[in-house]
Image (cartoon, rainbow, N blue to C red; front, side, top):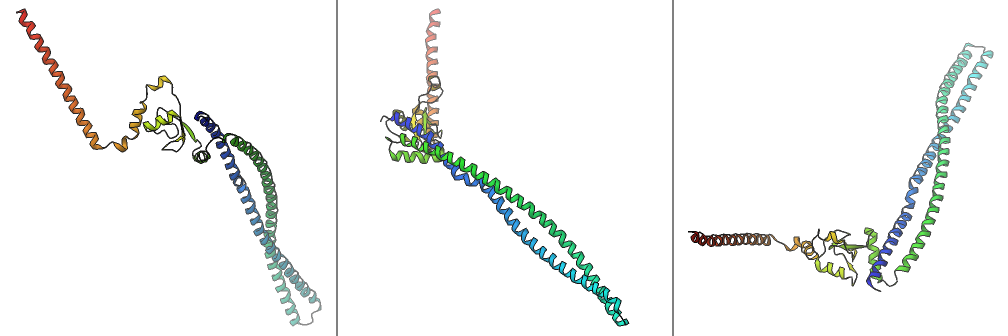
Length: 302
């Protein structure tokens, strides 16, 4: 298989893999879409249990207060009924005390009972609202799960088709290359990029001249030394070529920071000064020669 066919296959495979990884990420993140609803439902149920426990506690108090109230009422009524049958002042005082205490107890119980019954009524309304909220949340969660299951089923079918396409493309390509290619796409979305004018289109780094020439030859699969993507050569428009450095110059620039020292810079500066002085001397010599040539003409005129 010629390398151009391999590169074409890798480009097609890249599109398939990018789509495949996006779909796999959706499947992985799918449970997170329901987490907020699930957390809300869990919190509502917890609050309902706590409120229901409080309701049962208040209800027990109300029942106990009602029993106490009934006892106090009976004591008061018994005292009042006994007033008709008293024969001594001592009996009167005893019955009067019984009636007074029973009445006071009855009023105290009625007051506390009213408070507890009001709280019980509020709790009962809250519990009813909680039940409605829980039912609504459960229905919404179940609907979301059903919709998500349907979406996941569609995604899985699409993934199955993508894997078939992938299996059709990979034969003829070195499996180690395919494996590296998959890992690169998982990180960078792009696994194969063009080299234009000696520059990697993936990371926009200038490539070494010799390496860029090898990419241009297209005889083997090469990975960018900076971003690890697979590289292929792509021609540029003729009118754009003059606006950029040649590939050899680009290779020099790529390693300027590593190989170019301050001493080299000083030597280059000295060289420039020497060249400048040499040019000045040449110009002065040319001027002297012109003056020398002009003098004889003046003598001839004389």
